[in-house]
Image 1 (cartoon, rainbow, N blue to C red):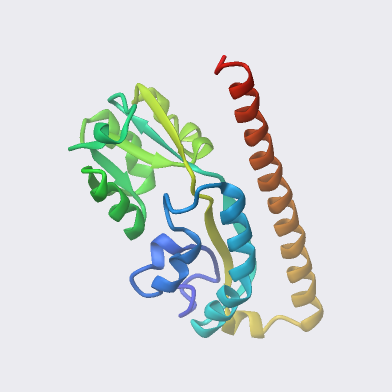
Image 2 (tube, rainbow, N blue to C red):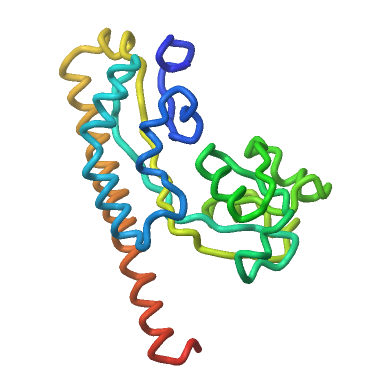
Length: 211
C-alpha cells in the first residue's frame, strides 16, 4: 500500500510483510537471541541493507524503531514451556507462528484491535505483545496471568512512498531525515537504557536471592 501510494507513509513491521519480503524478518527472530544487547547490535548493523531493501520496494526509510521484548497475557498460568500446549495464542508474524507451533500452541492471526474481545469471549487463551502495548489496550482486564519477557526487540521502519518523496523539495527532505535521525537516536537511548536497567535489576535479584 505504501509502495503504490495508497498510503503516503506507514510504519512497516516485518511480520506484516514477511510473505513478500521474508529477508526483513532477520531482525525479528523471536526467541533466537540470548540477550537484548545482541539483538540491538544486529538491528543497527543490518540497517543499511534494510534501507536499500525499502528503496527497492518503492519506499524511502525515514527512521527505524524498537519495541522492547514481548509478554504473554494469558487466561491460564504459564510457568514453563509445556504450559503452552493446546493454548490458542494471538500471533502477529509467521516467525512467531513457528515459535508457538514448536511450543505446542495454536497460533491465531487476530487483529490487534480485536484481541480484547477475543480474550473476553474465550476465543483466545492468550495474546503476545509488548508489555506497554497490551497494558495500553487493557488486556489485563481479560487475562489473569502475565508471562515473559520473551527476548525480542520488535523492529520496524517508518517509510514514505517514493513517488511522494520525490515531489518534496530537497531542503525539506533533509529536514525530515534530520528529524528522523533525532527520533532514532532517542529510541536507541531509551532502548539501551531499558536493557541496561533490566540487566542491573536481574543482577540485584540474584544477589538478593530473588527477593
